[in-house]
Amino acid sequence: MHRFLLIPLAIGCGGTGDWVVETWGEDYIEEGMPESVFEDGCSVVYDRFEVGVSEVALLDGDGAIAGSVPGARFEMTEPGPQTIGSVGVRATYYSTARFVVSSTDDASVHASGTLTCGGADKSFDWRFDTATTYLCEPADLTIPAGGEALTQLTIHGDHLFYDGLEDPDALVRGQAVFDADADADGAITQEELAAVSVATLGYAVGQYSEVTTLADFVSFLTQTLGHVDGEGHCQVDL
Image (tube, rainbow, N blue to C red):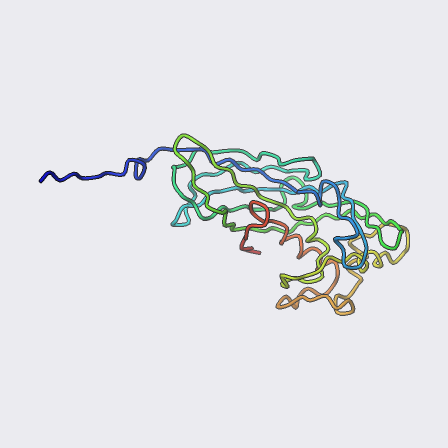
């Protein structure tokens, strides 16, 4: 009897492929959020939504960096996904991508625009210096030998107006932010947000008892903006 040893040619062959990385702010940042998104009937149009991406890395099964892409600042109101870069890595399956959003040559997140509630408009122009590490789980990220695979850091602009820090069912609300304009000059400043107690709003802070003002609350929310490949999960390291 002849015995044959079958060797799977596609497994263990080695080789490299390209990991391509992009970022996108989706329609909510590019076009704005209509009244239907808000629980209280407000709406938002962003005219600026800059994000500083200071680190982009693909991690292997041991948590070591398999490949990295230089970070940059991105204006998320520009239409369509924007390429961050690409890097050659070993052709295999990867479960974790790491993104760091932090201050580069400007704020880590700089958002400005117009908030409309009850038919009236007010402007806002906010800068945040938060630093956030996102450990993301791309869906079935396998780099093919001689080919490429894509990962997207998706930025969710609706998170800036959530009414809860830990609740997965948090609602989008704008009225409390709108009402924070204490001097009624039509511009909602971060100083005015700092004068509003979260306790009076009924907003849920969960375990983050140090978040006491609306300014603290919105600043914290900037550390929840990142997802992977649309709605994919990212663990946040604050």
